Amino acid sequence: VQLQASGGGLVLTGASLRLSCAASARTFSRYAMGWFRQAPGKEREFLAAISWSASTTVYADSVKGRFTISRDNAKNTMYLQMNSLKPEDTAVYYCAAAHGVSYYYVGRTESDYEYWGQGTQVTVSS
Image 1 (cartoon, helix red, strand yellow):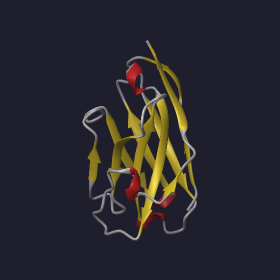
Image 2 (tube, one colour):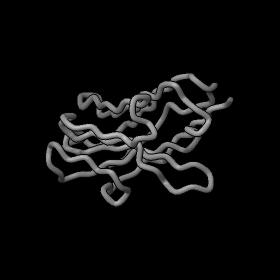
Image 3 (cartoon, one colour):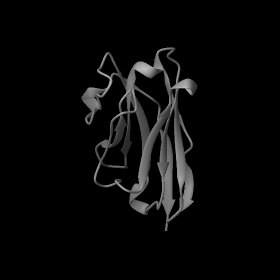
Image 4 (tube, helix red, strand yellow):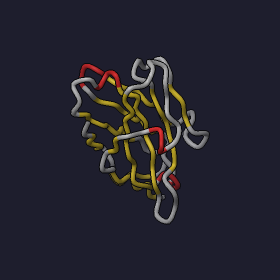
């Protein structure tokens, strides 16, 4: 499957952005999905994940309560609604997909995912 992340940009502290991840797979509804980010000089960080049934979502503590992951299987698209953005949220944001998993599965590490998008830059200015 090919993944295309979009929706990044330059915003001020406290602003909101919604990232999208469009997937090419006809069986998108059977892929567990996740969002990660990587800031300059830092390792890639898990943010949020959603099962293919959307019955399960998990978040990193750093974004819990501010970010919301969702998916629209009819549109082959996953989203990340980001509110109350902070300068420390500045990073390249990546979406990822995992196939052949159970309906409630969510992956929390990079190795849980087989497919990755190219990333979209989010810059939060103070």
